[in-house]
Every structure is written in structure tokens, then in C-alpha cells.
Amino acid sequence: MDDPRYALYTSPPRPGALVLFLHGGRSEALEAPPWPNLPGLRMRPFVRAVARACADLRPAVAQVRYRHRGWNGERADAARDAGAALASLVERLGPVPVVLVGHSMGGRAALRLAAHPGVRGVVGLAPWCPAGEPVEHLADRRLVLLHDEGDRMTDPGGTWSLVARARDAGASACGVVLTGSDHAMLRRAGLWHTLATAVTRGLLVPEAMPPAVAAALTAPAGAAPGPLTAGDVLRASAPPPARHRPPASP
Image (tube, rainbow, N blue to C red; front, side):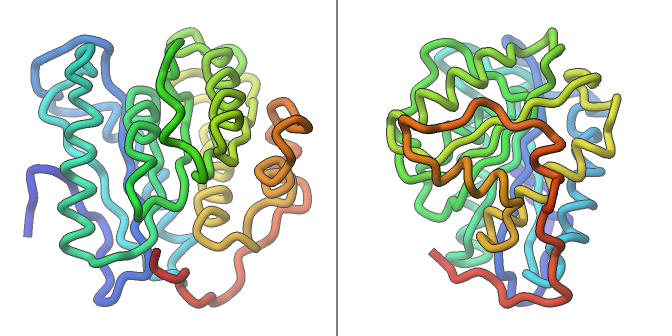
């Protein structure tokens, strides 16, 4: 059954989790996303990589469909549309654990939705984290935010600032800095896919989280490290097991 609020790519008979992707957009744009929707298409390799790596968890994998191309100030259209998609999917799938994976504007929307009771964590890919973005609702949530140091579209400094403020608000949060890439994640694309897949699985199965990320997430607030490097994350990462029991529902 097609739904205007989301595209559902995989839907096992008894899903053990939901991974919901939220693509990027613009700061201001009331028109509908164009066709082809390049930011949406950019997420497809992430969708495939996560679906493969988490197949033993029986995840439903979906992507939000926005009504508008932009965030649009206080309207926060992307967050509103993502919230409607998440509510509809939870109603359809039942109370499964959820990981939100958002790029750019979609990263901002994912962070806004993190307080949903089903959400296990958020993976932000070059997220848009403007000054003053709320963080109080992120208490007790796990956030892993990845950003290239040379990004000229969204500010890596804003991402590291949000990580610090979220930790002060009670979240388990860490940043991962990349080099030599770009906002669209086209340069070093394979690295982005590998990192996003590893931490998405780790948010669903804590023992599968790359050790450096697990340590950063559990570090006391006053002892939190700065952003990890991609090498830190990949070093001694736990390989996915052949099979794993799906995570318990929230």
C-alpha cells in the first residue's frame, strides 16, 4: 500500500525494528520536492547498506516524503512531515524500536523527533544544527552526529556545539568528524555508508556499537571527548553477527 507520507522499502512480516531515513532540503522553499528528488535519491545507498547490515534484525526501512522542499522557519515543515510519517509507520508496524537517520535538513528534523517514545537514537549526517536549536527533549536519547570538517553548506561547528549542549541536557551524544568529503557525501561515499551503517546497527544492538562510539556515548558529561575520527570508529569495530535476536520493543 503506497502512502504519501513515506516510502517503505523493506517490510518483513514481523518487523523487529524501524529505520526511518530523512533526506535534506532547503532552508526556505514552499514548493513540493522536484522530480527527480536528488536529496532523496542520495539516501538510497544508505537504505541498501543498512537493510543488508541489519537483515537479521528484520527491520522495516522507510524514507519520509516531504510535502514541501524547505524547512520554512517556525513552520518546521520537514519536522512536521517526518512526525506524521513516523506516527503512521508506528501505527502500521506496532511498537518497534526506531532509529532515525537524517541528512542535512533531515538531520535537524530527526533531532526534533527524538523524544518520540519509540526512538532508540538518531544518526545525523552533516546535520543542520543552527544556534539555539532545542536540546532539552534529547535527555536519555542516543545521538551520533557525523560531519565533514570542510562542509560549506551546514556548519560542523554547529554540530559539535549541539552535541555538547545535548550532553548537558542529559543525552548520550558524540560527534564523528570526516575529512576530504563534501555536504552531499559524494566524495568518500563508501566511508559515509560504512560509518552510518555501523552506528545505526549499534543503536539497535548496543553490543554491536563500534567501541570508540560506545565509550564516547557513556563518558561522563565532564569527561566527554571531542569529535571522534572515522578511523576511531572503524578501528576494532564489532563485526555484525551472522544472526541476532531483534531488539526488544520499547
